[in-house]
Image 1: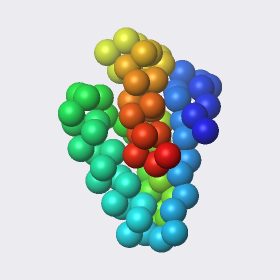
Image 2: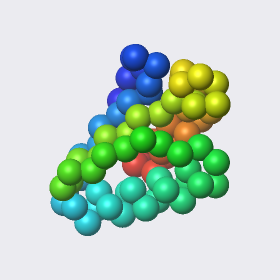
Image 3: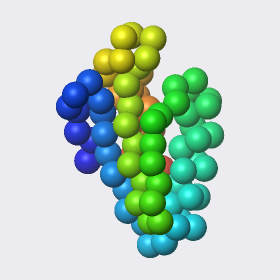
Image 4: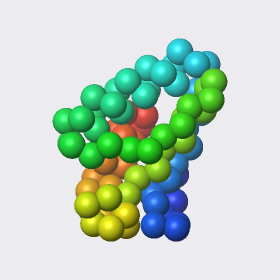
Length: 77
């Protein structure tokens, strides 16, 4: 579930293993490139944490972030 706090929209995703987590990251990378909106993220083994905000808007959460979050959710659900 996406949480908005500290000028970031954040979600953590857990997968069966590193391979599934990395496959998810690859899909998100292609989506982010297409939308020209790139996340800050971390990956440790089977866990991917994504943080979104819009640098061009002063580092706040904008509709662009919510749109990417919704698109990312569609990759999962």
